[in-house]
Image 1 (cartoon, rainbow, N blue to C red):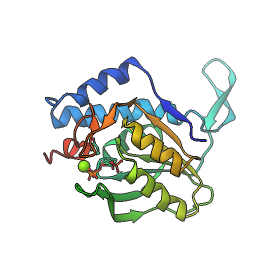
Image 2 (cartoon, rainbow, N blue to C red):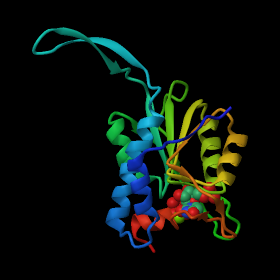
Image 3 (cartoon, rainbow, N blue to C red):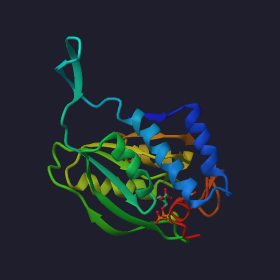
Image 4 (cartoon, rainbow, N blue to C red):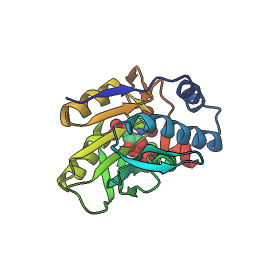
Length: 209
Ligand SMILES: O=P(O)(O)OC[C@H]1O[C@H](OP(=O)(O)OP(=O)(O)O)[C@H](O)[C@@H]1O
Ligand SMILES: O=c1cc[nH]c(=O)[nH]1
Ligand SMILES: [Mg+2]
């Protein structure tokens, strides 16, 4: 069963109000998405393994914990997922990066794949798939289908805003995937946009309005 986590925090709420606001410019929008990625990603990486190490402080030897050097890959769904990459790499600076290019057809709302590149060691790899928006869920389901085809099993999906329709579709298609989000919105409109949402995340991150 999928674990569905809405990461509740006053700083997340504050950044969400910035990205929802249609007056927020590209620079501020990009920065807010990056900060949200760090805050949501922090929670999504809570179960990473640590190992004991001894550290000499200026006063004495002490027992500490460091991250186990696991094979971690962050997978942004292009384009908008790229807006979350910098924040995730701040948390996991040694992670590798895979890319999946998907674009929703405005009429059918079905995603079209135009790029796919994943680093190797699929059996042991732990992946974090990132995309600010989970709307119908079509893009996330397709991206995770493709990742699983490579034999990758350990997958977490992280988004900023999700619609109930997308969460239901993703957890039904991939019940083994945990989903982390900054907020769960109300519904999708007739054009497949999340309401209240923020509009088109890719356009707002890259200034292609
Ligand atoms: O859940 P879904 O209904 O599939 O919608 C969500 C997808 O739509 C957006 O990407 P878009 O297709 O606009 O591409 P872009 O990132 O290049 O703007 C968003 O970043 C997701 O990938
Ligand atoms: O509201 C939405 C839905 C899909 N993609 C977006 O960027 N925004
Ligand atoms: Mg878009």
